[in-house]
Image 1 (tube, rainbow over the protein chains, first blue to last red):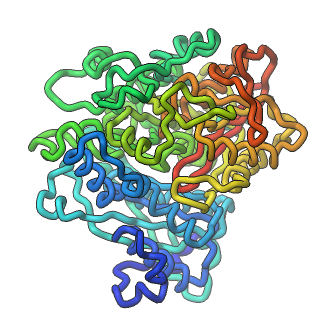
Image 2: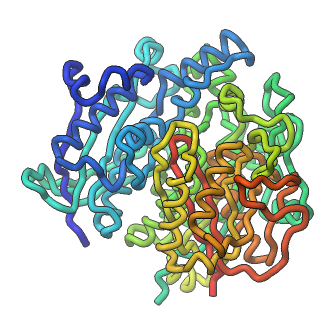
Length: 206
Length: 392
């Protein structure tokens, strides 16, 4: 069984760094979350020196809310004559992970978990089990959610689920490389009827 | 050696009806469930859909769920399919099971009905994908692990793929996996915006194909470590022998011309299963009926199988495209094909297209089928494929 190392953790990429990763021309039609997610992923690839991970996984509690709300508003205002192809195709939860793959031309394992507050942990568990078993050598695991203006003003609009406005990317590898940050030992997911799902990430600092 | 991942239960609801028996009999009769919209509240009556012909309140009563809260249709469809799967595998009273469910629509039917008003205070969460999975799980008391995969139209298949991984890595002995998806105005109008809905019944791989019909439904498979199934004396319905997942990495909604992602996913599934292309007796194609998907999938099938292309058909002309649930609904159809020795024939196929493979049509083929491949491809090029084998 392989050991699994975390070789990069990236979040809160400053706006002035965006241009380094993403030519403005290419970013033109992307939503705010997509841009942030992509830049965060590309920075994790750069720092870890792993530009072509064997897998790209994403966890998102609510998915791409900016585009979802565009189409919901469109349906409300224009009724069913509405036509919003771009908003619809970018509203699906897997937009982010597939966008990273399209941008980096990555044909590897690609998946998205959308399971409330443990979405990232489920993606991490999937990658961990594959790396341990030697089915992958490297995996990029991301967490991406956005808070739209509507959710900031009315945090309970879609329910009790608390969503963090964040983009985060972890690079996992079975090779420690030069500067491994942690060893990822285990991920546990716990479901109890009537309670919020919980997750435990067990990491050992190196 | 009893290390295989076997299937010990299945449940399905679709436009072909409620339960495995109803779906099987419609497939054998060659009767499509795609018809004029009835349950979804939409103005677009020009687009036929694959709906389960029951209202939300009828579904709620079947599940004996109390009135007085909001239930998404995804929850209701999912719970009905899950009940059948658990019951067949004799697990309704079990604890400590895992559920992995695929969905994208989740509770969007509730949200779009209320919008621009929020979910009323004090109501349990229904909108997000995870809430719908937990609602499905908690209709029963069996689960201490729940997870939701959301890779658009390959969600349920990727749930099956993760289920196999959880068992093979020793984390779990039994994982129930599949998906559930109700129709919503949101995605009907979304697909309409992309101009890929056909106003007639869809005709996958036909020269005159003009798009897809949306459908709804749910299906779950009970995946189990062979040793555990044998020990419990559970009836074994088949083997999940191979899985593959690859990103086409081409476009957010279009498939590449050579079907690279589809090709790689199918190739991986074959490699994992250990079987050769010539061992595959049938392919249940993704075959949506859009000009682009069917040409791309055909190119990938031809690349992989060459001269040994087995019979292929798409069952989307029966159920419509059940989007996130399609991977598990069609996996059930594949298991039924092996069990009952038939290949579902496409209902509307007439004109072959040189860009496409020619599917099994008109009458279902009878024979002895041991290994079948089932494909599910999603937006963003999230392409997946599995191999199901007869338990021998």
